[in-house]
Image 1: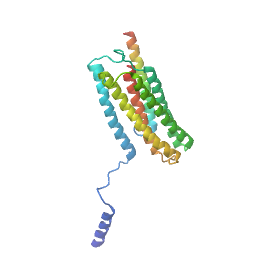
Image 2: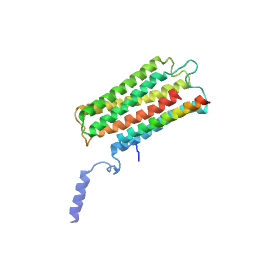
Image 3: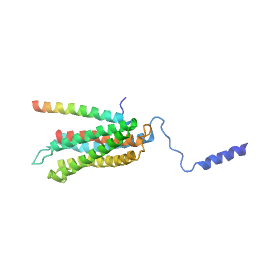
Image 4: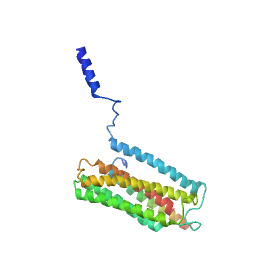
Length: 206
Length: 36
């Protein structure tokens, strides 16, 4: 009897190699927990950049654009903001498509979101080319390029995720029950959009 | 309760709230600036 239980113990031991299995929460799925922790770290990263911005404007009380002949294209960036916000609506449309087993809405929604994101990034790069001042000019231009550049890098990451999701959607990988591959990039995309609203309103409007 | 990190739907709703709140705050700031 004893030898049988020892043998069973050995068999169980042989089945499992390496470190003990990680604990899994029963309330939140690992994919969502991963995105949640990632976004929390991202908020802290953006927070650090915003601290530099508010230091200049509130603590030091320095002037902000337009000054010394340096101007920001508020109108063009406003149109760009509208483009990015509309991409969140198409993202939501895509996910609703996935939920309702509407493959056309899913594919078109993802494709439109990616194209709108690409348009945003193209306009942003074009804006950089025509601004007429360098990142090294003064503290204000450094903050401007750093914050918009940090956000642009996030749009690029979002576009990469969207590209994967779009290819998978066209290949028919998602169903009404299983569409985490659309939902998780969607959360990230909305986060990038929320961040832009803060970046645009503080850098360009206030 | 709204948790924008739990699902895309709640993230989208959060985005809408942010747009509305930021628009109201901006409007207030511009009104105060115009009056001062």
